[in-house]
Length: 399
Image (tube, rainbow, N blue to C red; front, side, top):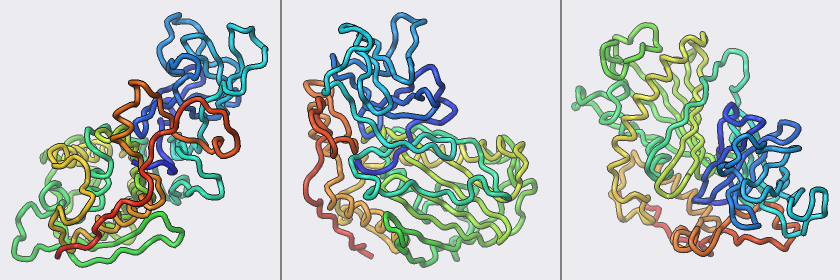
């Protein structure tokens, strides 16, 4: 897991004006709320007074949780504004100047695509990577499904690599692969990867020969087919994919030059063993919103097929060297992703999860460093431990 990237925190529609929302990302507790202007804010969730959760339960029930744009600690009523500064400490009197150390980390926020994103790291605005741009969003001729959130009990890198894998469709997804019917001709076509011009990730395209979709009584078509009419002949589709940072991925599916799906996956590493995936599906055909439910239903079934496989993958973390796996030419995109992770390792952005798990919540309460730590001192909480230097990864495929 890495600091210094944008992470989804909560769906916009789930963040009201009266109640904060908690989220655990990179193993650290965060709290999201809306300030007096309705702007989404994200703070470290650990109060620097006595360690209470700012977004935790409020025993008084009817007492307000957001006052004058500040989130109120449920333990002693300390009020923290969107910049992480403590505005009021009731025990010394409301309106009394608070000590400089009474502050928590506040993170840059962007609210786009129906998601509240936070930049979890201490890079300045000029240094940090931008949020992945969904160029079709809000454009005429494109329709966005409501954000689908999937919660899975495995590491996000396993999830990312699965999404980049062009060789698993044959065996995991009956509606995508050949279901063993074309053994004499089946193979994954050769493809190349290319780094984005702006950096932070790569892109690839591969052509796939697909069979007809099963008829509507097939389990993957339950809930109705989004196609309107099932395919009856084999055809070529041209899916493309790529990553942006360690946790954002795009998949372009070109059925015909006029019919396209563009899917975006923003992954929230909750811990090293748990992930929440914020899934945005765009399409430029079947634009009637009434088609959304059927497409959601099919996407959920396809996702479950992946989930069932990945829950059984060993080891739970991706190997730190490719010599621990027998890689094939079809795995070129996975190797490209690991090469980018190596660059992030070299930057010293990887979290030391062993050191973190040894002490966090026991005798330490860690926080993710925010940009504010570059401009001011006198902080209370320790920042999450990172692995210094670089981690050597063998990036050579063995085939």
